[in-house]
Length: 318
Image 1 (tube, rainbow, N blue to C red):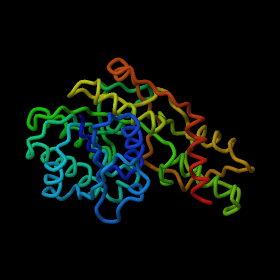
Image 2 (cartoon, rainbow, N blue to C red):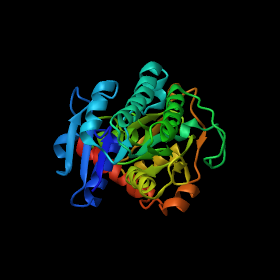
Image 3 (cartoon, one colour):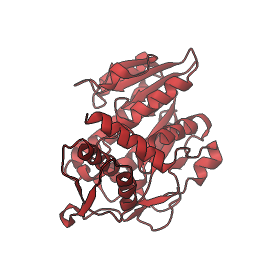
Image 4 (spheres, one colour):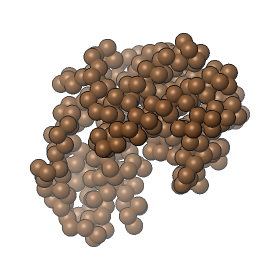
């Protein structure tokens, strides 16, 4: 029997991981989901019946330790954290506190409870130095934002936990992922939401955009959570794995594909004022290490991802 703990279970990736775990678990497995105690997640009401929800403040070390001692997890997917690169510039302290101190509290809680678990730490591809070729796990690191710095510190804490906290730790350097349920403060869902609003007659038929030339490695979130599970089941503790498709797409192509799926005409207007001065031009990864270790590969084509994302927002704006 496995006792699986998912922190950040009320978030975008956490919700998809819960769905995957609930449909693939054995009859005796237990899934424990943590959400923020203030303003409980709406996902608690429509999540799989096999999931047990608890409100836990990751910045309260005593609460974290007590909740871990009660749960006694054998597997931990530590998905809680601050995940927005652009917002980290205006909220550096909160980003660092959430991602670094929160991770520290989880690892120390496991140690204090005498629990030996397999722990997944989702770091970020933004820790890498800028490159115009697919990045491998051995490429140089040079975090260029408070968010990236917090994710590097997070993975270093995780790797330290192997020796000091006796955990098995798996570090995922995740590249961009999207899919149904992602909030509109990211590019693809922002485009999809606006198209849905235009179709519903609730905004003019023009989308104002910033830089569309940035290139990103895009994976469907449902493939991403499969990768996390594969790492924990078949990967090696202490090894860093890129989670990515290996294919780069210009943001312009994502938008054009979504516009092609629209039920009404949509115009695109580029606004120079929307450009980000610190935007990374190219971010594409090499997933070969993960594929060799786990036999994982993306299964959902980009057009399916975008279609499902657009349908999600169509329902949301009804």
